[in-house]
Length: 185
Image 1 (cartoon, one colour):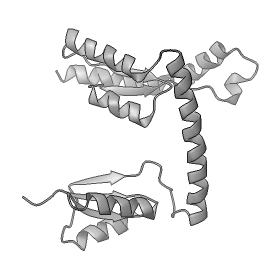
Image 2 (cartoon, one colour):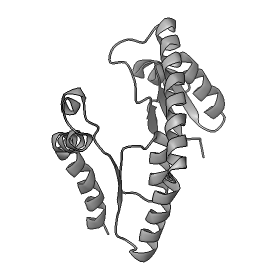
Image 3 (cartoon, rainbow, N blue to C red):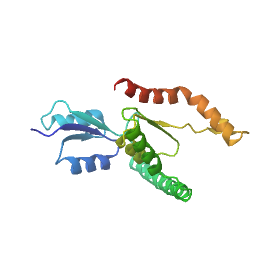
Image 4 (spheres, one colour):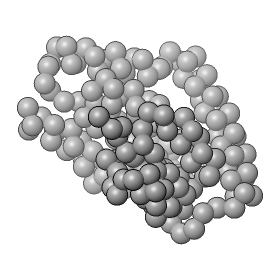
C-alpha cells in the first residue's frame, strides 16, 4: 500500500524543510510556503491530490514574511515562552495543573460512559488542548479574557463578566459541539 499523501503549508521555509525531512520517509509529502507550491510539489511526486492537508494555523493572509519578520517573531515567541513558564510556576505553587482536569475527565468517562464533556479554560495551551482531545473531550472552549475597555474602571470580576457576555455566542457554540456528540451516541 502506498504511503498517505499530505500537503503541508507553512509560511516558514524552515518549518517546510523540517516537516519534509522528518516525515518524508513515512508519508508522501508535498510541502511549500503556499498552497499552490505544496500542491505543485505533491504533483511533482506523481499525486494529483493529497489524502489530507496539514496547515499552519497562524498563516499570513497575503504573501510570506521576511527573514527579519521571522527573527522578530522568534524573539517575541521566546519572551512568550518565558512568561508561560512563569505562569506554570504560579499554577504549580497553587496546586493547579492540567492533570487535575484530565483526571476529572477520566472519572467522568468511567462513571458516565457515553456522556460527552467539554473543557472550559483560560490557561490552556496547545499542548493542553491536545491532551484534552486525547482524553476524549468533545470540545475545548476558551474562557474569554477582558479587553482594555472591559477592564477600565471595573473590578476584575466585572471585567470578566463583560468578557463572557461579549463572547457568549462563541461559548455556547463550543458547548453545543459537545452536546452534538451526545446526539451521535
